[in-house]
Length: 483
Image (tube, rainbow, N blue to C red; front, top):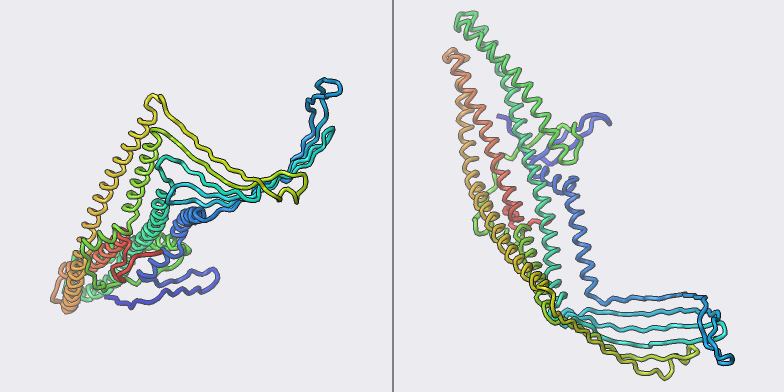
């Protein structure tokens, strides 16, 4: 049985147009899929959108400074005026020039749900025509506070939902990238099985050539019958057909893996299959605990339920009296020159209270609130169902991982026995102590054992990487998965 050591990725280009040859182990295939494949990069791009949304929210919690201005506004129109000399109204041409600027700083107050603001501004108004006038209106400083008096604080809710939303996006990216790696593992072992089938087909053909040559010599000395010789000839013909089929399956699996890893589809891949499993002991409780913290299926349902509760509270507050307040205090002055506009400013105080009292809305607000309450109940049940389904998947996968480790050990033991039995039967056949059927049966057992071992390895690693995806936890390195 051919044995190989685990090597790092080696890619050698013979010529510019020649086929690349790559030796690839399981770990390197997984890294290529998760680090640089097109699919993984797409998932990272999706996360970047959520990341920048979160950065925008974080920036919105800090002071916001805005400058609003009207650099130039010119008007020329006819206006009606009273002329005292004639005691009549007349239309006169009027020209007006306006320019203004206002600088405002605003800071939201998360605890109370309102916003504090401060501003300063200056405006110039010039009238031309029969009546000429120049005025500067200055507001050196103005500070105020505005808030909805509903008991609903959107900033308090966003302080809970936005970090959770970013965490969900982060874990969803990790989950999707891990899924990309798990798919690479599946394709890796599909190629590994095809590679082993190809090796067995090549060895089968070589064995049939050798056995047929031995059979011909034994037939010449009448040690075997003509029927037995024809069976050997038929086995060689079947081995050629099996080899051609194995070559096609190998080419298809190799192209599938190469394309998934972002390589040229004509890359010649030679896989190094891990025959020895790492020591791994996973408990259901530990796996569920990690999934609860990292699995986006858990986290997204919790976020959905939290958003439903937020919407329900907002609608509940809006069922009755709605009120808002805007209070400010500051200084202002108007003068015909810029300098005088800032001298001896006058107090400017303003308090605005707005009330909205629903008298009859035909049950509109109440129905909307009841619908939001139903949405909360639906989100709660969806979260519970998602937790149940994910936990069931985890329980089954943990059991598979733990059981498949012993299955791999069993298949390794069976393979050794089958290989020794075939070697012994081949020696007996050469000495004329075994029939063709005995040799064929021993060879069949050996090939079945080889297929059984590679299949057991495939099942174990597929189960392990599925468990990694469900929990987003690396049980070998004992750390959460971050991509």
